[in-house]
Length: 173
Image 1 (cartoon, rainbow, N blue to C red):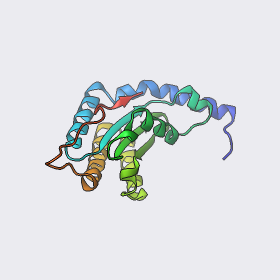
Image 2: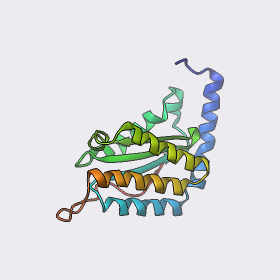
Image 3: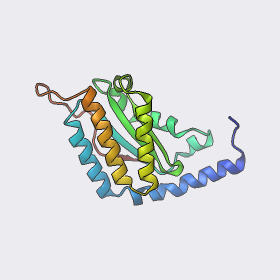
Image 4: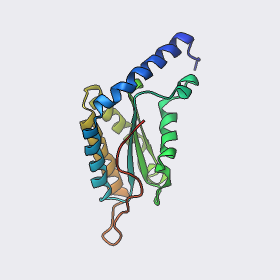
């Protein structure tokens, strides 16, 4: 892949800085609160942990070196400790507004049980909702889909209720 020229880098930088302000207009505190409640309700049904993380634009250091949304999602997967769950079944749903990028990162416990095509389908469906401006509806739908996968592979048991290992509130960077 060819390295971007100065004009492409500047264009990307401006797009990312503009998207920073837009993020808080589409994901309001009320929307974030409802999404956090949905994550909490979901996690009572399985032993997995789900985090939602969104940012308008990448930090300058990522832009400078041409890093991808996937690289940033994997970094946040680690920083938010999604990888550090008891059953290795955490899932990060990551949105990067500036590039209309969606990444779903699943820990190895779940990733080895769910085909890559399933994750791709979820990303495509969420992308359609976001393009239509339906941020809350799209995130709610993908959250329900991820929850169904976790319930199928890691259901909560009556004997051992699931513990909440990570915060439920979405993270805006």
